[in-house]
Image 1 (cartoon, rainbow, N blue to C red):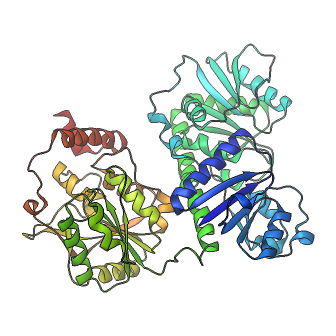
Image 2: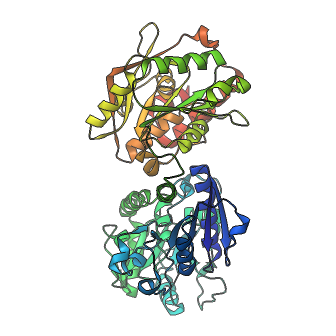
Image 3: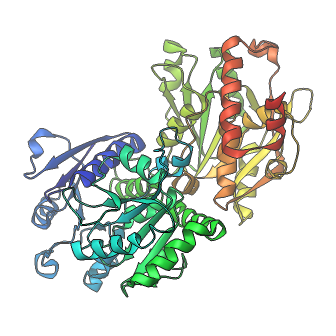
Length: 547
């Protein structure tokens, strides 16, 4: 299976890097080959092309006429005579809202708006060790699309603040701009992700001119980097900035007063940071990847298996073959609901899994090296295509009707997006915490409760992945699932616990586990605990850390 992106528009370096990252992530998300061609499209290099995404309308029409492959037209904004040239009802994509609004009405209904989102690096930028240290207060001017006189005007306004505090200015624009000012400034054309993360994280304030030429992605990246922004209005409506803050006119006095207020009023600055972060979290990079994935899956629905299976069970195996075989047999005997099992074979059972690979409802993935639970879960989620995704490992055993009742309960609960069955030991002792207990931030919990809750069983709706993203791979073996659950709650989604579905964890002697941690396991636990504490600051674990 092969998808080709054919883009003839000349790209700047930043756009080129974004598109290359997008194609790499799509390839991993869809588990199919994705090629990239510029200028002339040569299909001879790719014999089995199923879909072409092109920004050339003539090429799109010619390929659609051949009817040998699927076609998506990526409208990039130049003046194609769509009414005259479009012979076929091609699905279309735009990355800017204004592009869709400018299309003829009969084209808008089949046009998907998929903007570039914000990479996860920006949300974590304040935790970076490579922050730029300076005695002066750094202010960013987003100069993309601004005329030289407009940039000079903003710099002149900031010069008036020099008497109150020392500042230095970073101007985001093409390099080579020289200004007549004694104030410290630097002009940067930040093309790489790494450069933008470092520069944004080190700034205290940003000036954005709200207009047609404003770089939407830069604004979102600054918000994600937790920088308060002065919005300077040029009487152009931008829904992205609606409800962020009151804008000010392109007036020197107003710019000076608003900038000084934000530099001095920490409460107001924090309020804007919080609001900006809320806006940025709605425009994450993973949402871009997910939207493209869904569009491509839809066009390849005759090739890629559709979501006919309602539940994909991602089964992580760190145990011997007989343990995994027992788990699969147990699921088969007690499950009367449509499902597929995706096995991440961390134990490397090798040729012993050949029989499983022959079954249409089981997919076996054997990684080249052992994966952490976070990476294993992510691998399984990316392969899945079910309406629901259930995560567990091979140490659990299910009971009759467990999955049917679990799905029914989640479907009946209109508010919940994730559900947790009851998990017990074979001696019928409850393991870990319920979701309601976990989400109570003031509840003091033991580290054993944290660990058992982390390795429990959870099922969630597929749509969560596009909003929350994947598991944080910074974790080695502990806290990755709790981290994901807290991120789900942070995004405003709710969970529910269900007493009517029960699973049991088999005894340790069957698993051949030790009662004590190995040196490596102890190190992983310490490192994961420290990372989790820095991220979430749970009271009880912080007390353990002090001891």
